[in-house]
Amino acid sequence: MNNQQLVQRDLQVMWHPCTQMKDHEWLPLVPIRSGKGVWLEDYDGKRYLDAISSWWVNLFGHAHPAINRALAEQAEQLEHVIMAGFTHEPAVRLAERLVAITPDRLQRVFFAENGSSAVEIALKMSFHYWLNRGQPKRQRFVSLANSYHGETLGALAVGDVALYKETYGPLLLEPIIAPAPDAYLTETGESAEAFAERRLEDMRRIFTQQGDEICAVIVEPLVQCAGYMRMYHPAYLTGLRRLCDEFDIHLIADEIAVGFGRTGSLFACEQAGISPDFMCLSKGLTAGYLPLSAVLMPDSVYQAFYHDYASLKGFLHSHSYTGYALGCTAAHATLDLFEQSDVLARNRQTAARMRSAVEALHDHPQVGDIRQHGMILAIEMVKDKASKTAYDWRERRGMRVYQHGLERGVLLRPLGNVVYFMPPYVINEEEIALMADTAIAGIEAATAA
View (cartoon, rainbow, N blue to C red):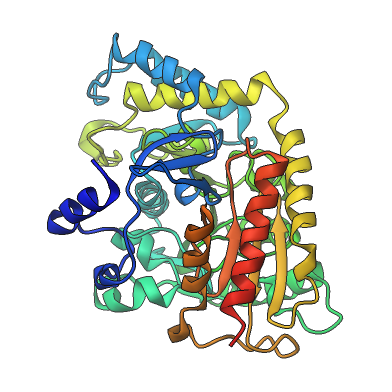
């Protein structure tokens, strides 16, 4: 089989995610036969450096031998069993490990299948908690401008990226949108920390006016990933925790994309010294092998649902593959890799090399910002640097970078006009140079006219 043959078969039956399929009349699909480390290989033998960890999930490279072995061994013993009324060791041990490594106060684990499902659980559980506590007026959620939390209806509702959300507006609950502490929006001479503190005053006003009807505020700690990789200072999280405590409002940390070392610490919340009331995890949890997510919460939340069955206060939410043994095993193998070497220390070195590799863009007239939190680096292309005037989205400048990357053998998938790196942690110096040089040349080509 070659590339063309598989593409022809695909276009007869497949509908791809986050894609206008008509684009594939002129933009060829890339069929992948295999992966190893940071590399993907197509059916014609061409290789592509996976600079985005295949949608941010792959931590330790494709076809990692230790994860492969663990899954093969587990598949011989147990792949899955219903988790209502049953249990198994891989799930129990994974819950124990997650409780041990996440911030204090997170003492219970509810497993699901993907990130959006985890967000749905946190939203429902927060609302239901207040209902069980005799506060039925609490029915609202607060989220940040430019946020993204997933594609299922509840998760989509608390997001604020119009590209994904606007069409489905009539189907969605209406959140309260608070201004984001996005450091890109700072005024001249204003620090990211000072701007974060200023944005906390906006949140205080919301809590003061509507706090008695708010269940929770949900945020992506430090990086709004699908929101064009906009970033903010940890001081915002520290202050938001204080506000939530003051007004007795839940704080939901969506660490689905930023957890497991992406921002420089194991979890982004650690950089603010806080523990949320709910933490949503997925993506890197299984290093890109299998879909699995988890929601962690304090025992006090668990106790609000712990009643006789006839009280109807139970949390009767379920997923077919909740806590399935193969997914939990992939997560164990992933956590083992963190324990076996100082991954975070290596990431700090890798992150510094990534930043150094794009330093040539610092004074580029069409680069409005280069921002970074750990292993996430973003470069914002702009029409005018001084005013930060954006390019018209219809020009699809990011698509030009994507195409240039594929020609050079690098998978870059810009978000609008933002080119970003989020590679597997095993990327080496030579591969970083290729990734950066390709991005720089792609940006030069995309902004040339």
